[in-house]
Image (cartoon, rainbow, N blue to C red; front, side, top):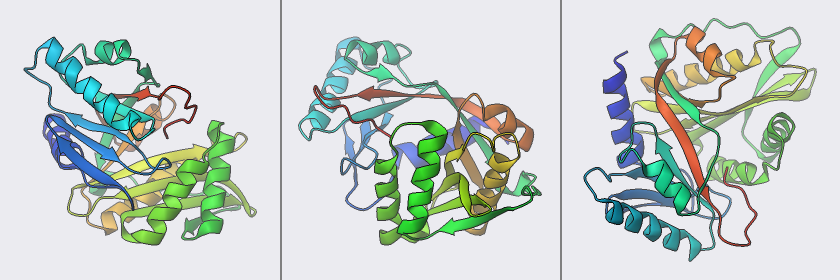
Length: 269
């Protein structure tokens, strides 16, 4: 897989030409920025910013415009900055404007037809497709236990998407003797080469037993069946070595910079 070619396709198809990822959500092209705005439980933020060539004052003005847009709707939001984005000092400018950085992740991708998908589940574990509210509750339970915090907003957005357009999202829960112990989501973007792997989480006590690999393989098979050439993932440091062994290639880094309106303690998921 050619890294530069794949990254350019990713930028064009999923960032510059992004489409809404759920009901009640709109994607807006305003000046050099592509952003998504929706309900409070949806993902709100900047997907793309073509700031290359702008002087410092112009960059700061674009950042201020985005803050004004989301704060007038009382929405916390992310500016999703990638390691190859311009200008090079964009992270410092976001920090100066009041954004807080979340953990850096690694954008990785693989061709669906080239991955080793022959992964065996541990004894007593079965995969359950998530199609209804009961399944979404299990996803939320796993994420709360695996990552800490409150994943209810993510669950509400997932339920909205399953109800409105089930062909654009798939979720799966791993059950061990009926108990949900791992869960993950697949975002399918019709008309693009890419499908996204999100939210792969496993509860303590079941980590290191192959469930993460099994969920990656399961979702990759679904992506291939829907005609997607690539799967991509924002990998945490703990996931990166596993994905490398499976055949994923590092494209760049990505860091969410989060802006929270004064007095608003909601997190952006």
